[in-house]
View 1 (spheres, rainbow, N blue to C red):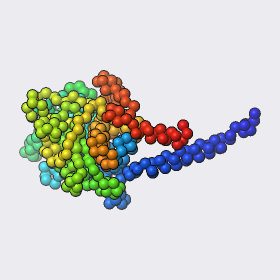
View 2 (tube, helix red, strand yellow; view 1 turned 90 degrees about the vertical axis):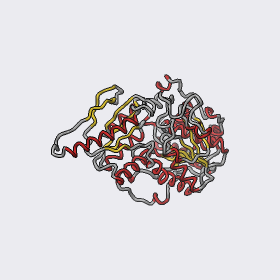
View 3 (cartoon, rainbow, N blue to C red; view 1 turned 60 degrees about the vertical axis):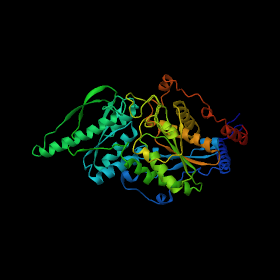
View 4 (spheres, one colour; view 1 turned 30 degrees about the vertical axis):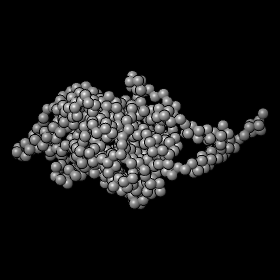
Length: 454
């Protein structure tokens, strides 16, 4: 049989495929337009949307999109919205905090141009400080627990920060990573004072020897670099600039974005590490509308759930603030704590939910498969919280949570199949049954199949 006599020409095949694609897209769009999705496109503040451009890195931080998480919304009957903080230049919600802390420190004179910002961080705040500090003409020195994902310290070193990896201990221990970071700022200030006294020796470099850990996890001697302009301890846990970053930025954005999309807002939920995001957003939203419910989602090993729901941080066997060993046994990073920070005390909460490592892992894989969202451990826990709130309030409510960072910072642990298998956390769920949901979502998928004749 001659070519073309019994077979469609190539051009005809391409045309047929194109038409099929258009028809598929038409029916899919028609389905979504009638499914009640009020937030099928990102919500952006109208005032910010008019901006033609932004001046420098700092101006690019904030005003992140608020998106509808389609799979969770369909499965719960609520509008579950995620604030895409992973789209900030430094890759996380902590960019806002880094800017606010440095700005206020420079304005107050506690930090000078060319000075070093020190911080103890499980990763995200440190990365944000290392990203933002050069834009203000400053350096960054970070102390990080050595059980944090290794890629976080590698990112920090690539950004030019000085990194110390130390063993995780209780905050009451002098060598907790936060306490070491505080000492590094003091040492930098002492060095600056000595240099002022020795102004005639301009070319002499004074170095203080310290103990640290390399990014490969091996203990090694490291050197406090030349910090002749002094240091400032960012103190993200207690510095209320953290709270103000979200009270003045994230909270108002969420308020404007939900109003702009015409849906209003019924609830907000997030986990807490420093407590700044939860406190700043909850206080702002409840001042705007006291009917907005605000909730905590708390990971394993953290005492905040008990504090919110029962008024005590620990069980009766443990005295609050006296625990000396590392209390955490969770795969999540950057959330959960066993003390009350000044930032957390600013929160206005209506209740709390407890999340598990299994739920966080399952949620992350579910969202990747069904929404294309590649998120980190704290973001996954926040989405677990959003579903819990939806189940508590019932269908028809609008719920906002924070997508703190992406999975790119969690490749060695939370997103590593071998690591999860070693810790008994291999995901097995096909849907949201790990949260007790059986399946309006799959029913809709079946409806799609019926539309297209499969």
